[in-house]
Image (cartoon, rainbow, N blue to C red; front, side):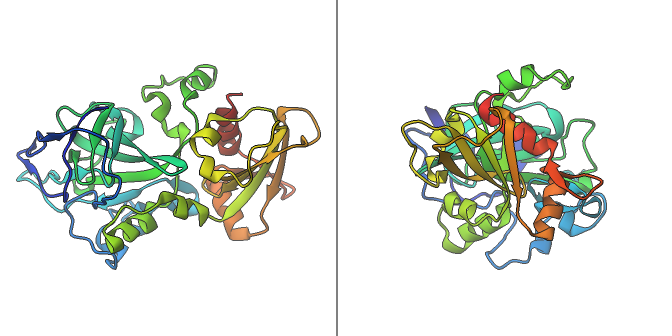
Length: 348
């Protein structure tokens, strides 16, 4: 690992758009015990979300939350948008953006790159689980930040901004888009290159949004604020309600399972003939059961058997996410998000 940027409380560390106080470095493994709120905005565990969330162009504060509040419930938002607290004379946000936990920088986009704009991804490890945090729409990235650099909670990653895949959005809505979740596969680039329908080059490598499955960051952040310690993400993953169950016949053991063995519902048998995979409504595969008897009917994607939890609310959210599609006769089948997730996981 490369030497890392020291951590601490995330404070306003920007003057006229220039980052200050980020040159101190430390060596060794990241401190996985500490937690920091990712911006200088003073937030406590009990602070109402309306006081720190940035609304989208609609003006509805709920559109800055994780979930399906956008477009009347028809559009999914995978992160939490945190508003600016400090601005310069031009009205541009000057808030420092900091790592919430200790980790290793996995990806840096110092120029505006896709919907995330300028962004940073940090890779974290806890017992039986590897997960990422993502910090998007930055105006600048901290100097010297590159993959392999160790950061701690409170390490400055960049400056809040309004960059996206186009010309940016209005400065009044500058914010940090924050995500936390799991990466589906390290082989994503190979899978993406085989997809003829994708005409846009993959500039994010394995950190492309198609390969990232997040969960609601707010409960995790509130726990960190309450305890002032790094929360265990696994406990939050295990609380996710299952919406869809997929059965597939394959002898493959995906890298995802080896990377996240804490999600196994049972030990691996001598020979795996298939998998029962339980998905939360937002597309995260939260529980894996190895099967010693293959589900009938082909192998790979052709063997897919789908079970849908009898909960109209979860079904509606899963449809908005693209995990499910409702046919004219009312039946529910696998949507593009679920089909792509399985294909990425197994490199089909």
